[in-house]
Length: 216
Image (cartoon, rainbow, N blue to C red; front, side):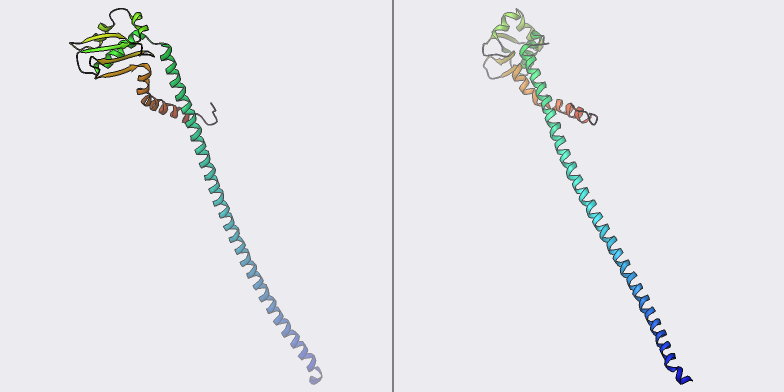
């Protein structure tokens, strides 16, 4: 009876062994597949993070480029605006000097001449003025200038000179060794660099202080 059942028993044992081995193989395959999937997921996540970091870095780089361009353009426009304001101020000053608008002209002549004489050495000076001004000032201009200088002894002579144009005075000593061109135009040219610097500083501050979105 044992002999007759032996093949069947052997077959069952072989099948059982095969099932056990197949289960082991399947389990190992599953474990390997899970490990591969986990590794692939990790690599994919790392790749995603790397790409994200690169994208962020590129976005930051482009942002800085754009901001840099905006800053350069903003500074350029601001400089143009400041220059336009300075030019308009200078032109307005020239216009007022040319028309003598708002100027007490006789007083201005006295001040300009006294200032020039006060910076020179000597006792005798010639104040050259446009011929048109000579008839309009009347008498006593030389004495008034000398008094304003406040130095003694001092002799001031008024000379009408057609080469003196544009308003103001040209002052010199008798020998012509000391000459001060205090005409309006010449004086503006001398003073303008410092005036321009001060106006530019104030204008630049005003422009930078404008609220965002203000367009002028």
